[in-house]
Image 1 (cartoon, rainbow, N blue to C red):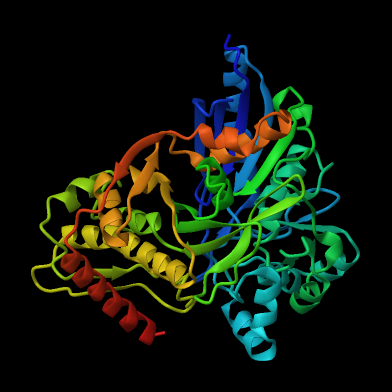
Image 2: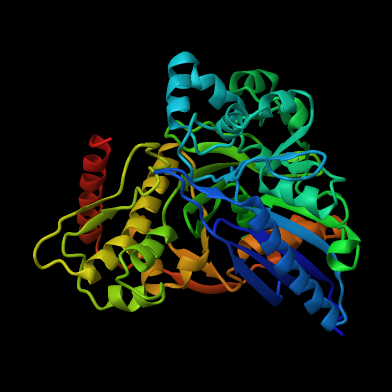
Length: 496
């Protein structure tokens, strides 16, 4: 038996649920994941079955409880991290959802947002929430469900329904309906939460038509979120940490000082840079958000959200079927001398920061008779670096100096892409030894709540480097590649 304490992190993502058993030093002891179906009812609509999410979470968490018991080292706590902005509404009495979850990628409320932009001053929403008026965020999803499910709005007004992002739904289920809560990071992504006052905002609730009585209590990221129902895992494990996936990744990457930046490459790409105790308003369409809240003290961040990064490789595999696995892409790109003038703008679900064009659609430019599948593969990988550079350009324009660039997520296994990324952003890129930084952040929050002696400095000291990628591209080559990308992006935006 190890004398090091263990923690379970539940990482509920867009395409799968994962649970990881960590020791208190952040080492992975065991892990399990389970995929669930993606539902696409119409063009631009993305849904999940909340029951499928729940079933996969129970499956993977049970496996980690068993793994801990096998090691004679029962977990001291659970931390939860989750896909953000995804909306679920469920019956307060039964816990059953009244509609499928509407996923963060979903664009069905784009028309609602367009009407609202003509009727209200978007700057007021941005000033309170740090967010733009976009279907990406949760508020319009709640309203859409309430207005389209029979009797839902009346039941909500009567207090019979609960609203929540995925963390709230899981917490409700894990505690047997005893806790309806969320943390400040998830709340800050709803367009209903005043990030300066740290409260649900009555003006915003009225504007979006969301009743306050259905919303969860907002707590610190490290807090006592209740205890798991013993019928689930045979033991009452306390839940002591919650953070939205991107903020959890920043915590796992030790981004605790202003200027520290992490960039996560999963289904989408999400860049978060710590701005310290004061929120910074972006003049370049980045989002001002809560980085974390601990002991009642809020740390803020700027964020850039790219909707499609790893998803473009999934599309090459499942849609075009020109590769069999994501792992093939590194050798394909490395074998090429250049991109042959082919650029791919992966706007499969619109464009996020800094363009914010929900109606944009994907496009490929520069195709000739000589273009082959390898060109598509390389263009897809390059698009991830170009989109990241667009975000870094916006960060620089906002006057925020970048001191550290740390990357994580499945795409960072691709060494060619990481080197190309460093070349395009013209900054060193550090990849950590523990790639599961999102789950690690959730685990470390739960550990901090379990042991008051552990500080953020202690967590930062646990970070270990796996590899560093240093810019090596000639400046003129970098300039020409970026110019080609900008031309492709401009043409795509003109088509919207």
